[in-house]
Image 1: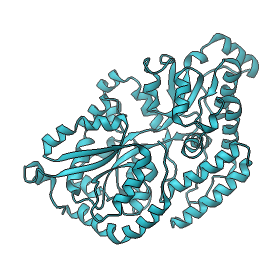
Image 2: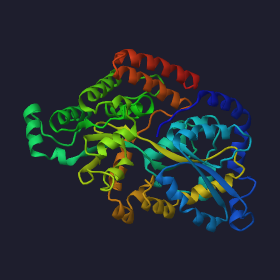
Image 3: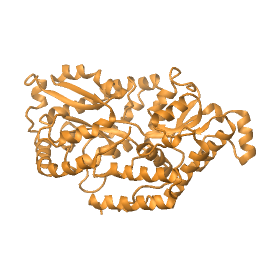
Image 4: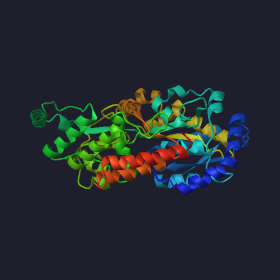
Length: 452
């Protein structure tokens, strides 16, 4: 899930959206005056309406696609998915938003864009729709709703712009068989005068990784330390585990404080003493391959990796792989939300789709088809757990996580931090040098976004 945002599109789109997005956004959402209403469509008044959506090519998308005939049968509204790779989505969506009449109606929004899209007026608030239909948002995992649902996330102007789809929050995957190995337990006790057990904090985890690399014949951590998005996603878990953050509550950069510097030092230590050779160029696929082949003790990764690593057909360590929330205070949250494009001519019909796809019945069907749910009731459903016993673990990981700061320039922030982390971990800069520069540039982004 690697995020690259082209700044020129953002600048142009902000200028254009100031003229075209604001009025169209509120009138359709508050008055319901779309070209055709979902009520008329369901009654057969307009059976020729087709909603178009740009969707990421992942299992969760195909789980929804398989259910689309049910939506059409119930409402008369047709739906067409354009399914693409993640790297192509943002540019396609921004280009779409720049047109007075867009091609896409319901928008699938990554949390990286959860600040950008509302701030530019590209998507509309859903509050009036939710109130009109008495749609219960309390069913969602709070951390998911906070991450993709609200903009701004706090304050008197807070509105609901999205409903969560699914989560890809991160936690710690580890091999229980290595933790329970008697010889390794004795060696660990002798070396550190501590029991070898599930790590409770970041320092203990990094220590275990080095021990496993030196004593168990495997890498300590299958790391994804490639420049840009991979290293930022993984390192953010180190930062959040220590109680650090990118900004404080007043949008002053804290990426260079003591907690951040310690997070970098521990991360660099793990690369040096606890990771496979070449980890500084690894992306998710590389790390997953190492872990699934039984060549690593652990992997800090997305919850959607748990089903893969516990599947005997895809993993040699299926029986021993477990997952817990990131050791320490918090892990990194990630996920997607449903939104309605401000330049869609079918806003009411788009809401009908969102209301349908997020209903308890359909959300459960999606979950049973291996699509990670964002609803608490579905995560706890007996039928879902019977088929996927890992869902309670996933719920725990999601609940103990938080996202990166979400604002107009989130993607630029990630590029800056990723650049400096790579230079630090390759030895070209000290932690202080790199993070001081990152903090300076993050402060500039906050000023440019008019957050301070």
